[in-house]
Image (cartoon, rainbow over all chains, first blue to last red):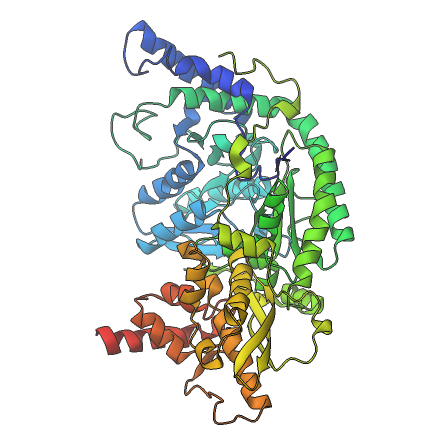
Length: 414
Length: 224
């Protein structure tokens, strides 16, 4: 029998059958447009209200602070561009080098339209430093956007610490007549695994994506703290407090709420299970295979993330061999990206290009068992061995270490 | 409704895997065949003895690195055998494997003909590559030419050594100003286009300002 071991849950998750069940009545049965006034529509309207409440409960916010969008990328675009476009004069944004492209490219788009941008470095484990946030702040700063956990290497950022600092700073800024600095966090990868209580995090905006939490694809949430003024990207009939026009994706919204609810019911148990599997799997891989480097932080790490670079081989070739034995994973090698540059995240750690080209990411899911990982351990070392035999490369580990130590880590001002 | 489970008590029920995933593959059948069954691959470079020419291009930093050994029949001036090692993705491995077949099949290829092999010829024999992967095959022909040059030098055929009257721009990827000129002539307009064709400056960003200058120069020369 063909094996099918899916270890790419950071890329997307299957939709939980319980979510599918919850969505089912909203396709052909309760299909009414929530904006109409007859009973059929009121069912749809009620479903959205209920979903909003369920999500607000997880986020510890008001239901009307939940904006439904067409996905994580859209929520991020709305948060960043929405805030910056609402600014009265040229503004300044702060982000980090390891953000998802949805964040980096949105910031760069605003930068190309005349707004200033500071990009913060990270340490070798992928951590953003509060001191760098402090150093980057200018009088014109209106937005800080830092991800809650990284999608490639799983590093968990100090969002609470940064949020608390900004909240305090904003009080002083108000006295000086300076603009408030809004704080957005991309929690697409963190949702389901970390506490996303927006009050504890001190964030003004937070993004979640349905398809990363066993919910449907094409639906996202932007938490928008009341009193935060943003400009919509999509104009039309004025749905979602005029911030996201277009007939609501009712089944998607219902699915999103159900997925998030389930994720937080099962979070504690599932995290514990995944952390054990993760740490065991990392240890096995790095001890069984020489010249391997763990990318990211050993403890401040998402429970499902394993990202290791295997030197002298290239990631895409590894993936093709893995696929042949039924294992699905991912790599930061340039060969799978549309550009020729390897992972900007692994490069930001201070790793030389070689390390990024040889990186393999396994991300566990609810279905992943120890048996699955044992199967990987049975197949994977031989694949690495085979490719290393055929490779003329022989990267010096000392040079790699030197690159980490000597990497230039400074705030990029654009 | 009947096909959807009402509840999923076991975590294992949650992941649903597409049934046909085993059949799908990113590349052509020929690429797959050469990737999983590489021809003339060297598994241990220490075992290689008595070759006539050795060539190497690329670096792990730029994502591809190839090493080529040649055995040449001096009487007929034909390549008898080519062996190789590659650090790189699926397309790079398959492309080198195919190249080794192309130069040694049908009793071996004449050196003068082998010198004319271009990346496009290899891609064609592979049954094509996805557009974004074509750059992965650009190093094979260079490694081959570098090995042939090594043979010329070793056998004192100094009149045949091609000290390509060109300026080396990127020593790691072995890209000359002529390569950049060709890329522009083939329609490259931006640095990214040129990099897709030549890999210049990938993992070696210090050369990029010079490359950009050359792109402007040749664009002006031919299209200005």
